[in-house]
Length: 383
Ligand code: PLP
Picture 1: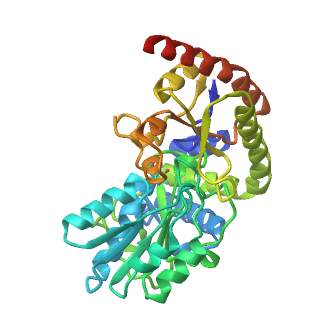
Picture 2 (picture 1 turned 180 degrees about the vertical axis):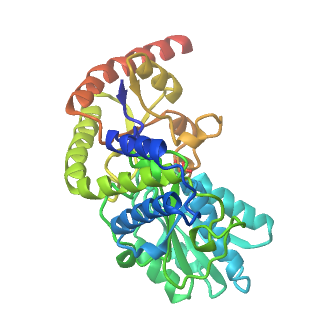
């Protein structure tokens, strides 16, 4: 198997699964219990919190564990909007993950004023439009750090300056950047930031929200006193322990992994561009998480390409995993100006820690022939 869908999810790191299975076997205590096995579980959670905080440049008191990147996004947006009822405007972008877009639509149904700022043909946010949309009534601006479909990396520093000028808070969805590029939440200047375990070789069903000290925020889930009364529910202890380990490994390996993976991505990009005709590269050349490559294979249906690659054991995506089972064209590709036909011919390759140079060579050997054959079939069926 050649797995090139690492933006959808990642294979768990063996060191993480080993840590989790030992934890599951030996530590069943409830972290809220005061006797030793409870306290041990609590300590393990706090160690994980420390690891995640270290990776973000945050204080451990600024990390709240959640059940997913999606929950972290919902929590940040709804939590701030509810905490600041006197400000009823929310600003986001047109290319956010559904976790943000659908939360924005929910706010609209509640009667809040919501703006979706447009992006240019590379997927970069239009800062002039953002400046127009942010007002003194804006409670929160939420713009993703990097896009999951095309990798576009947004200028968070500029976004923060624009928002702070009107005293608005800033949230960023960093699910696709944490562990992949180096950043520090305080240098970035954001108030809230979402991350997820399964994108960094950790378990699914666990995420975290960074909340800068003093940020007004109300809980999304009410109940017990877990997570400083900000996220009720008995903790997913093994998941959190696994996430913490994955975060620690990602932080330690970041520089080395990034260099190797960017080189592989570059080989794949150049190889496709030189061996496959009639393609369109989607996304910015430079301001991008370079392990994300999105190409339109013009005149083809992406699904046919995906299935043909899958018969060779090569797994890619036709867009974001969340829209895979829907007929709708990707809202991201639509926002950067692709026609529905171009959008429907788009394939995302996303490279990760367990990919090798051999994988890239195999893809570059198989892909040109697959595309050529599919084009012959589709032009034959049109005759
Ligand atoms: N935000 C982005 C940018 C993502 O890519 C994803 C997952 O695809 C999410 C949020 C949702 O994360 P989770 O799968 O942990 O809910």
